Length: 148
Image: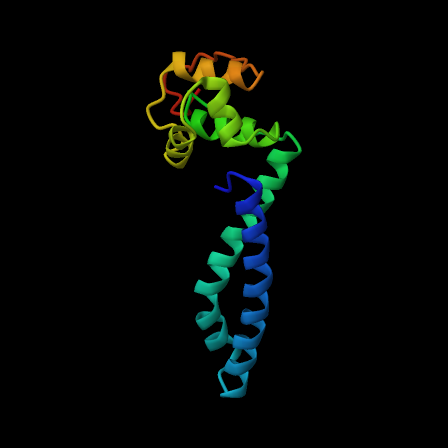
């Protein structure tokens, strides 16, 4: 997950550079006489990583526009807290200042996606971000294996 503008810029640069390397690699594979299927098998792992990075860049861009993913049963609450900070354009340093903790603590928490965060702590972070979360509770019918 991209967490700040510096990581975003680095990722965009990496995508551009990788695209160029992929084109050159594909060309060299053609030049040595590999078939389309062989080229595809050789390129797939590289392209898979590239697509994942493109999705992360796209996800960060959506966050900057204030578009958030839905959270179910508090799974993903850590990613939501990070997303809120990114969407509001607040740096980790600024959030740390608002929470009166060291910036390195925010960095560690975000790197771990706030794993095991308490509701009390999540609420303090939401307040520091001038945000609120609203919930909807849905009862699951017996025999229904879908999560609420």
